[in-house]
Amino acid sequence: MDFYDYEPRLRRPPRMKTPELQRDKHLKHMIFASQFDRDLLEHLASVADLIRVLARDKAGSDFLSTQLSEKRAMLYFTQPSTRTFLSFTAACQILGITVNEVRDPSLSSEAKGESPFDSIRMFSSYFDLIIMRSRIPNFAECCAYLMNDLEDFNQRDVPIINGGAGTDEHPTQALLDIYTIQRTFQFTSPQEMDGHFFAPSARYESSSASRARFDELRERPEYSGLTRGLNNKEYCFCGDIGRGRTVKSLANLLSLYDDVTLHFVSPQHPKLGLPGELQNRLLNAGARVLTHDSLESLVDGVPVIERADCLYMTRIQQEYNEPGDADSFRNINFDNYKLTPDLVARMKDYAPILHPFPRDANFGEIPPTIDTNPRAMYFRQARNGMWIRAALLAYLFNVDRDIASYYRRNFAEYTSYAAANSTT
Ligand code: CP
Image 1 (cartoon, rainbow, N blue to C red):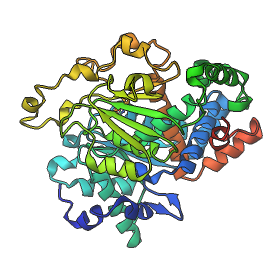
Image 2 (cartoon, rainbow, N blue to C red; image 1 turned 30 degrees about the horizontal axis):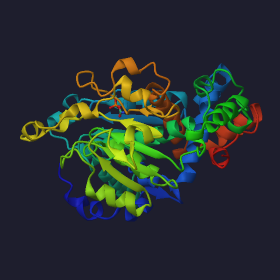
Image 3 (spheres, protein in one colour; image 1 turned 90 degrees about the horizontal axis):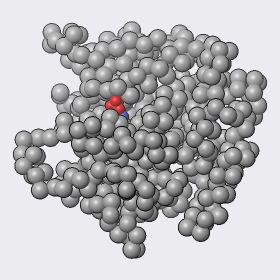
Image 4 (cartoon, rainbow, N blue to C red; image 1 turned 180 degrees about the vertical axis):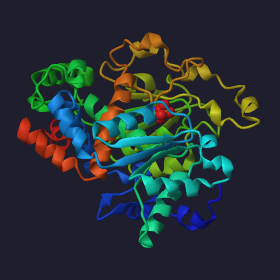
């Protein structure tokens, strides 16, 4: 694909791009994880919590489904997807947005030679939002610039959401990952996390079960320094770090928090290890960054698997293999990047195991025998994607405050994540 017209804009550092992707300090396009700050992450998490509560009954669902019923979304997914495609579809449906899709460009007029940029412009003629996934790293970013150029010429333009861009970025996956970690580190019980047992207003510090679980953990000498929230934690990423777009996006967001250590466990191979550029960005953001070739690697005499407050497993992404890679991977012991029940048993009791999914059933980085372990959070993580993506859509189209007002009128005051995170 020819990005010639966009090259000067693509080459700029991320901090110079961010202002162009917003209007009046409000996100317009969602392209990079670095567009989120802590305030926005906490706001979206709170809105997601309200939406998941409201969606539980007919009155709340009916209210939500009127919020954006005048909007139409195009899901343009030319790279395979299950979770991102379906959770965005469900999120749109929750808010009443009508959805349509193009997933196979051989069935669109691209098969007749139409350029993907012309396709995008056509979608913007018929729809109010484009959510897109592509194998090509900068395509979503260029589409956002195309929309901005149209706006400058008083032509119709719509928001672009990046649903995964090659090996580069997957910002809404990072958003749902952060949301899952935020919820996990409130130390609510699994039942509370699913929202089955507690009234909507009985959240976080007002919940006795939550207090009990947290206090019970802190009574143990080894967890006496434990705090709620994402600060003061060690996060471990394991697997294909170099080609993992979800790792890059999430690591960037975690570096926004205080006193964070990021462990990257991967084969020592230039394509699979932590890219130098990402390492520098994380160090500059104030994170402690350590690389390892095994979950057994020692830091201050303690294996990484036992230190981690949160473990993020990833798949070895064979689809990005290039000629010669198979040969250069031959001497790698990939068993080091597979989780086993014995390893899980050595993890901290409260440490969640995350995975962006899909997992590779043939490779087996997380065998299904681990799915019933209470630390296994990956199916909840995927469901959280629906709620937080609905919150993002509500925010982008400015109905998030209306949803919060409706919630307050019909239920009670709610506790924001910012307030919840300030309690230890
Ligand atoms: N995590 C994720 O992006 O999954 P899909 O590829 O199925 O959308």
